[in-house]
Length: 246
Image (cartoon, rainbow, N blue to C red; front, side):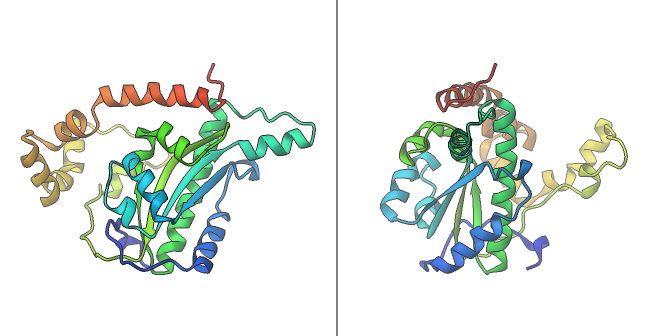
């Protein structure tokens, strides 16, 4: 697999992912680096169509949420660790903001290992960021207990499409050697030039009636008011799930 050619897959063939292959991919996922070797994550595998239908509204009813053979919901999981600690007369002191941060890192590293293993075996996938928009619905549908927080879902299956590669920022925009270097405005504009001139994004800007891509992203697609609302909801649900944020 040439990972320079990676693209998200949103349309899947009606072909099941064999259970032994899925097990192998998830096993490879567990070899990801993680904090203290706690593996403070879990994944809920959804394959039954009825369950995918229940989850679909929480993923904005995107077709891939029900079309993909497998949905994987990656979670921060301190429920398992806390139970183990209780059995060993030890307190699990990780139900706090630092614990959630570390658990999120662990879950994401696990998810990325799963993604790499999936592509190595001819599968395609798309990460769904909609989880953080609908935390409570997913928690209730998947019966997630205290200490378990969903952070990311992956739609997984055999690709039914080969979409064009999305443009990325040049490496010089991302990599800083020895110390971080802030770019002047004119340099930043140069770094974003290919993204702004990309046909896909130009069409999106025109369709939305915006003047430029920055306006489309920050005023329409990911406005600050939405992020503030989601931040408050994330805080509320974390407390509901047993996390202390003081």
